[in-house]
Image (cartoon, rainbow over all chains, first blue to last red; front, side):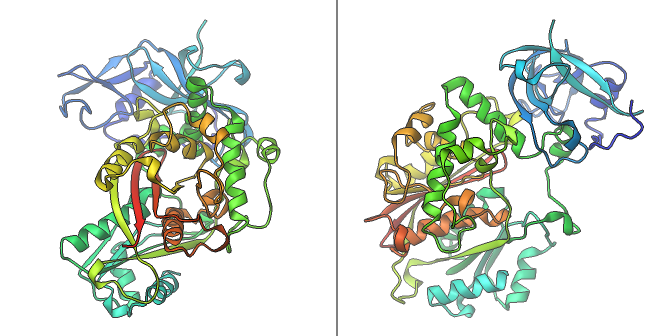
Length: 137
Length: 359
């Protein structure tokens, strides 16, 4: 937790709030359709596969792999300018959902597409936790 | 600025302002008003039978052209003014940078600056799957700069660029270097689409819309399963089918170039080479206006300039100029069919136009 956190924070909506609440409580979840079983991220009001609104939250394993990544050397995003170089990645979870995230706790030069990663829940403020990933042991 | 562009466009077309009965605009990245089309009509003193905003990001301009033609075909109007204008330096406006809601919530907190991070991850994945090399991407920037040197008004029209310059420039979001990314500027561009039978005979050759295609589904590339093939494959297939022409028939291509990787991938998706062969295609072909594959003959957005939401219209204007035979020193000799491709967001909204001369 940082008192002086200056980076952009998610502003949860009614739809996405359970995702952020779960992360803050130490659980990593993915929105899943109760009718057809489709998993999706970011969360949406309806299932992208069958348009059902019977959506729930399934605990995810927290394991996945890097689909693609980039090392940010210069950025205009507020609060990140002093963090370069940092890694932005798309991680594909075991459940098949993809998310934009950061890969942390490693040398960016050691990363490769396909590398197995696991979730790290980063408590950045008193009320917000961001799911990030780190290379799996 | 919109008034100036409109004045220049009707003067060039040989039309009186009172004959303009259609108006298409796009949302400027910096600064927007509710009722934007009627606000512009009010300021220009227009009486309209058709007006709207086309909001497909960088694909908006190409998207305006076929919508204008469709509205004319439907009998709503005869002369549609399609105009784009934008300012650089959004922090000075009260509106700031417009972003879709998902970007704010699921990308910005991770420092995934849109759109740099998205295009960088596409480039990395393309390199991983197909062996595309940084020098392939860099050659696109170099070729376009050479074209810009012959283009009056180009933002970077004075200084040649070498492969070493590009590959030696700062990494921004790797593997993308500074000179592979557009730089903001202020500007605009306008086109008038007219019913063929009503087009003024003022000595300027006419250009015909032979085919158009559009495709898309998402905002963030996180939502696309295969990020190295874009919706342009679908928009191009539809446009070429409508025109009943094959990609090989095109004498030039004006391809949306917010980043070098966008051009390379669109060369594949538009059908100029097979998927994965974009790197080899760029290495083998000469993309100069006098080369064997003239591409972004005015320098594109990378070297001519990307004035925000107006950037895509410079591709349309250059395509039309080439087909009119009014491209001056950079004229593609004998050009009779050209492709213009617009791209919105991070490879999300795609619009392909096939244009021909003698309309």
